Amino acid sequence: MINNNYLVISAKMKKMHREAFATGKEKNVFSFLKKYLKWIESDNESYNRTILNSNPLKMKENKRHNKDFDQTINLFLKQTLAKSYENKKHSKKYKGEAYAFMGVGYEYGIFNLESNPSYAFEKYETAAQLGNALGTFKLGQCFEKGFGVYASTEKALSFYRCAAKLGLTEALHLYGMIMFNGYIGAMKDENTGHYYLKMAVKNADKYCPYPLYDMGLFYENGENSCGITKDFSFSLENYEKGAELGDPNCKYKMGQCYEYGDMGLDIDKKKSAQFYTEAANSGQIDAQWILSEYYLTGKKPHIEKSYEKSYGWALAGATKGSERCAFKCGECALSGTGTEENILDAYFWFLISKYLGSADADDKIKEVEHKLAKMDAGAEVPSTCCSCLFG
Image 1: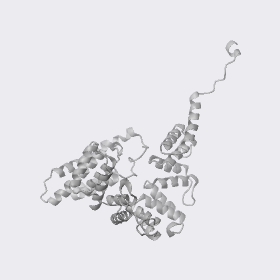
Image 2: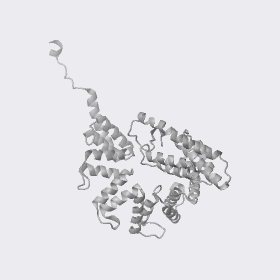
Image 3: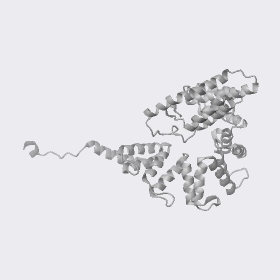
Image 4: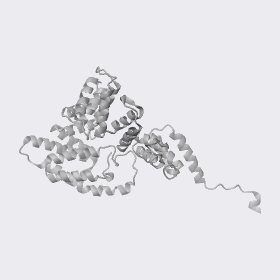
């Protein structure tokens, strides 16, 4: 869940905000808002973490700095909804988008709106009634998660299908994967799933490159009822394009391909390390774990040993919910490897790793608790004897 207290709007996003609003055109502002939503929902932003790694008391200052930014958007959305358009087509389009983003505001508690699931659902519903693809997609999410309305996988599936038919790339991708795998109670239909996935890939761009990874897997595995066999060349083509567009999983996959010589590529440790680094910087937790391991021992000549960087990548993965990265943070804190030795930090990370599912955490927790108990007991006091008491 995104918390506006912890949201630090980037300088690039602020510049895009100023430029879009300076034009005074609805088309440009809504184009910006779509990009802003992608950024808001990105898994790799600092506020979007399983565990915060900053002082939340200090981070609350961020909300004050966001106020003017959000108020401009709030005012624009309200003015759009109140505006009378001569062109009925424009009226339906822009009001539909305004209702959808009002829903986003109520969902995440942004745009100077308080988080309110019921209000978010109402705005999404109105947007969907006006034929807005984003509002329709969000309505599907509300029904799937029971957000602001009772949960209904049947209705969720229906609205996802509608959003896909309206051409939203995220909906094409999601509905394709739902049908291909038979998720959320849908009757599995690999042909329909593949069709929608192809449409999603066709629309993929730097704001939504994710369908390319699933298409790559589809042709890499070749296990389907669609009559499509393995095609490593086409699979690699999708991974490469996805990596170029910024998909973290595609970058990670390219790192694997160059490390092991998969998909017909020659082994190239330098390129492998580069792709792993790009993937890790994009928030891919498997790549963050690999880099943590690489820096622990070194992978010369491309990666020099660095305990600090090893710990840094483990910490990055841990804050995103990787149990093995959390466990490694505990080990580093316990031994002082790459970070200051601190038994309480170690205890914290071992507890987190257990919560995240680590099978090895219990033994470490017991070990640390034993050490802490000895520390709490203080220095050992020798037992008294008669001569001590009576001289």
